[in-house]
Length: 119
Image 1: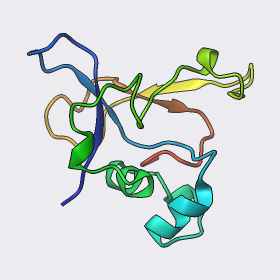
Image 2: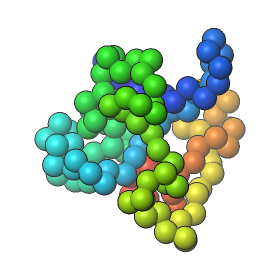
Image 3: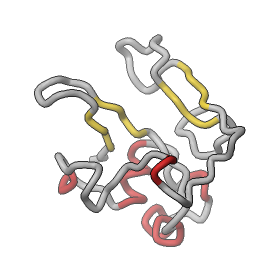
Image 4: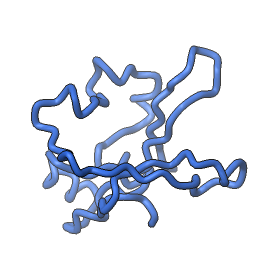
């Protein structure tokens, strides 16, 4: 069984969430490499199940807030160490890995990133 990370974006009782499909590892890389049994950085977190395995996310994280728990999501503006650079470009494309509404442009990633789940 594989787990995924969804950030709920709507009110309780509404089915509104964002699936975090991938991330670019910046810290804790050696631990992630052990968990994922690979040295290749681009394969550590480049898919929903790979991401949860690398971060040791299990069912125990279900329902945990993403602003004051062991698992947190921060905006680049809130982190002093974030260095996306002024030239970072966000790519918007259609959804992947689904059948329904796959034509909607609801997938976003940084242009040139080697850590996206599928190109």
